[in-house]
Length: 76
Image (tube, rainbow, N blue to C red; front, side, top):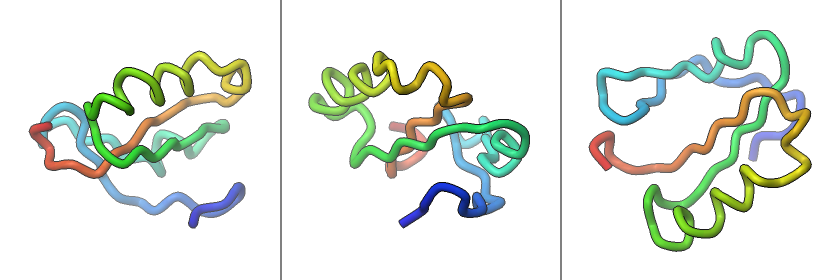
């Protein structure tokens, strides 16, 4: 489990397609941020309820950059 203050691994994640790489270590190198892990992209529970609730939370106002990460193939 990753905890506050832990180093972010220098790995590339994919956004929308394999060609769109995002490196969280680089994105979070300056400033603060939050990584939210969800079990599956575009599942009804995540898309309709969990992610909108996370993003609407007042606790995120001062969170910095927010990344929602799921484990799926790059084409989902």
